[in-house]
Length: 159
Length: 272
Image 1 (cartoon, rainbow over the protein chains, first blue to last red):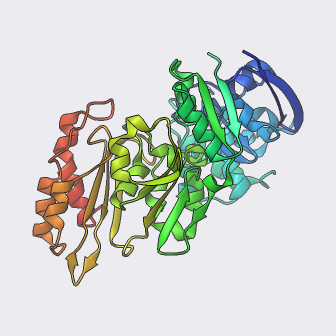
Image 2 (cartoon, rainbow over the protein chains, first blue to last red; image 1 turned 180 degrees about the vertical axis):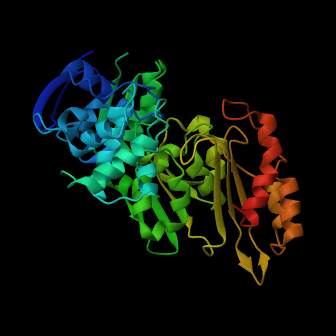
């Protein structure tokens, strides 16, 4: 079967790859581009570990057909830091013990970024709603919620 | 397993491609078809998409609303004129799933999903489908009863009347994980009132049968009566009639039969 050419913007860089028909975006990002930050958790849309931003909107990359992002902007965790400087959300997660095994963390951070990009001063209920698509087995969620609130109040939310 | 992906400019062309190929599935938001591909469903050999703007339209200004099959739940939540559908839309998945999942796709979602469809069933929605000679309208109950045979046709939009009043339409999803998660039971009721009596009662249940169904015995207990404690009691007692729930990881069939009346009573009496 012939492959399909796919060009899109990955964390601000133009990329071009060839995908088999039916390849999902998570596989394209991890195996074809080498961006290991989104994780495979379930392949069903239930865990949120694969969450990425497509044109600024939170999507599940494991359920996204790769070729549908042609010409669009895909942001993953790998792109949110500024050179050696952590994004305020990353700093807040570290300071608030919001990661233990770290597996949910990329998805949680992208969900939190999607929230703060639209709503820089969320309420606690809005943070809970924003991460409601992300499962964590380790932290019990409280440190994650505190970290997002800390990032919102602590500094300027970065675009 | 690689599948062929074909994208068409019009829903007519996409519908033709769907009906011509037994192994073709229409890709909306991806929450159903991509999951099947991820799980190695070999019955899907090709994926069909359409970039038809008509599938994304929302007409909600008047008393009858029409929502394109490609409209996502996030867009429903952003539309003020569709406020009566916000509770069902909000109950689905998390923010990412709501950015992806579509109204049309939800019609095909198996248990324990398909919550938006339960709401549409209580609202007597009509499903507009692309047939061989143009579009045809199918009442949603009829659509659901023949759902297995609809895989080769393309849903274009759904339409329904806005509820008689905000009070008249009620919706509740019972789930283990809040705010998201698969459904133990989903309930929707539309109870238009005339001179204090219910006229045209509709009660729809999700996860109580292979597809969302109407609770006809409960509807008969409500019809023509006022919404008082004894009417509510009679409807709750009748709720389980005609249901055939299954077992899944969320709940057993026995449990679902036990609690459907309890939750219908709470829905009808406005209890939390």
